[in-house]
Amino acid sequence: MFCKSIAAPPSPQRGPTIVLQLAFCIASVAIGTCSWAEEPPAAGRPWFVACLSSLDQLQNNIDAALQAADQPELAEIVSHRLKRWGDLEGIDRKRAIGLARFWPSPPEASPEEVLFIPASDRPKFMKTVTFDVVEFARRADDHYVIARPEVPYHVLFRNDVGWMGDRVATLQSCAAMHSEWTSELVRKHDVGLLWDLRQVPMEKRTATAEVWQRALEPLLQKRDDEPDALFQVRRAWSEPLVKASALAIEQTRKIVLQLRFDAERKAAVLEVRLVAEPRSEWAALLRSWRPATSPWQGWSEIKDVRSAGFITGLPGLRLGGESAASSSRGGQMAWQVFGDLMPLRTAVLAVSDGPVDSAAVSLATTQPASKEFGRVRVPDVPNWVRTWIGGNTEAWFVREKNTAWVAFGAPELARAKLDAALEPKEQTSPPSAPVCLSARIPLRECLDAIPWFNRLWMEEQLTGREDRIDVTVTPVDDGLLVRAILPSGAIRILGGIVADDLAKEAEWLFRESTE
Image (cartoon, rainbow, N blue to C red; front, side, top):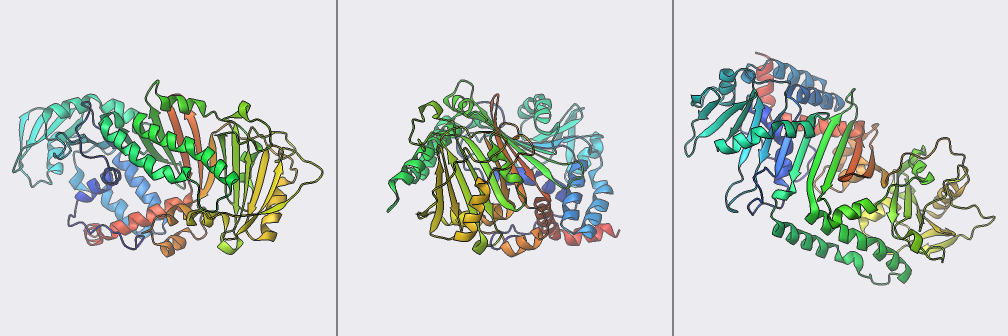
């Protein structure tokens, strides 16, 4: 439904196996998309951990997503099936469940995996995980072995948690880290993923950083017929990005991704935290990216704005003809995008080589008696940029001391939006808390960037739904925090995907629900 050309084949499994499919689908996707998978780990800890807060919470979130996707009948069937599953006897539905994966050693070996599932009754638990079909034997009160053709599969119980894997030593070491994982990942969240990049060999990380830098090199090169002034601005902003990308790959200690639904399950919060290696160049760079406030932060609150954003910490560009040395990393940029349809798409871009005046009466830095508006040619830009600024070849331009304003789109519409941005306005509230980046981004544009995503299905799901994602980026003590508030449209999209996946299990679901 939601994919046009890429779709997973229907699973041949039925019955209780759908629980494990649902419980670990996020982990499977995350692991499957990773490009690092060839060399041994640097230490004896897993490089990837995925946690769900509980099976009950998973059921509640699936129900909310299906309800958001206008699938109440399917939600009722799934809820009924999950609640009466005798197949899950012995499993504690109210505690965290998860998976850990180790870096392969040697490189050609399959990565070692460990499952941890809370247990309320050990004999019933063993019957559940073996589907009451595969033979198992008890070696000790807390140690069971499941029969397998090549090597036995071990189940070790620690603190009423069943640890399942190939090696007892690995299960014992993982059990010692259980409270650490659950506390960090799902103490306040529904889902948590952790990538411990210290387990990735440094030579692999360095090679990946070099590949990434080569891919970004075109950002530092002058394009044909590109004005010198534009190239200087683009290069000044691109150089820190290219450098930061390499440092992030080589000097990030771990990445933590967490998701939680709000109390009414009509929105969700996604948080991604990058933890830098202490005393590294990457950590120093993040500390130098200082949050700031600006009246431009209020742009996202304008009623008809489609997208808006604000970013600080940009290199100084000497826009006003004066030295920007004192604000070499104090530049700011803001943008607004209007219009759902491309013919009506307009965008306003404001760039400053230093902090923007926070006077409560104006969104502009200064208000001179007269402004000299001009028309400038829009350079060749990638198609994805055109989706934001429209297809016109010229744009309005005006400069006010240390701030430059550009308005893209149809001339009359663009000029009206630019005039509105420059017009003095009474601030109804002070700027939001200091941030490094604040943005409101349409979900449509994000999904539209995925080549195989069905756009017609997406539009059908998002009609009449809020689809703008609010994103903030802020440095924290040990790294960087990215926080995104996912609106009701995102929950509906998620529900549609879940419904499509559950449709593959329709025969089993309907059969069991009528028993």
